[in-house]
Image (tube, rainbow, N blue to C red; front, side, top):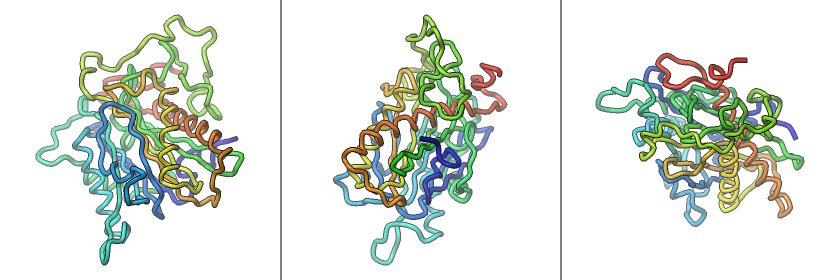
Length: 336
């Protein structure tokens, strides 16, 4: 099994991604736009989530489909970003029909990047609504990763985080994709080495091709925590979207999001702490025309976690150096 053509979530037909960011602010917004509404759900396993419209994604609730998903920096201020994406969709006549009007359904989640060295003196109103609108206007099949969009100001333990993506086409012909903003309290690396915890799942040297260390470092199980002095606060989060072109019900989309959380745990150590808001949205647009049978679910559950791990590692690996960075990028810490 290999990644899709672009090794990104947009290998799923009908999904587009756009980024907007401010490098002086060290924060930004990523908008995922569904060209046709997608069945959606969410699984929240972190202790400090910041969200918009996630309750409607529970399987027992009425709305089945969404028009897009927003990942944003800015902590609670960043929840404004979904309003900007919603405004763009309204101008483009998208949304859930309610009588003569349409209401775009745009859930969102945020990371905490308020103490990352950027200038957050934005005045009375935060800039995230405008960045959300800008990100939506830029949405396309091709997009940048690393220190862009919601990953612009992301940090992990000892390194810059970032925005990452990955995809995989299964033997059944179904494609799975992932898009993650990585701002975890923990580390994606084994001990003090350059080796990623999730190296076993890497495809085509997409995050350096270093494999697993042999022998394992003596400090392989040592916890590396970002900003221990601030770890009593909610200053972290890994948030993302997994998507598939399979035909899924809302309940099945929920189950896929739950399975994808294994990918966070395999890529970040520790994960799902009270100081993280770890959250995964799931989307299914049915474009493949394939509905998973019972025997297909083991494969889908395993591989959606693998794709999640790969997207997380790519987000860290692709981070770029910017002025006033508090932490080095992966490539600064481990020059080729």
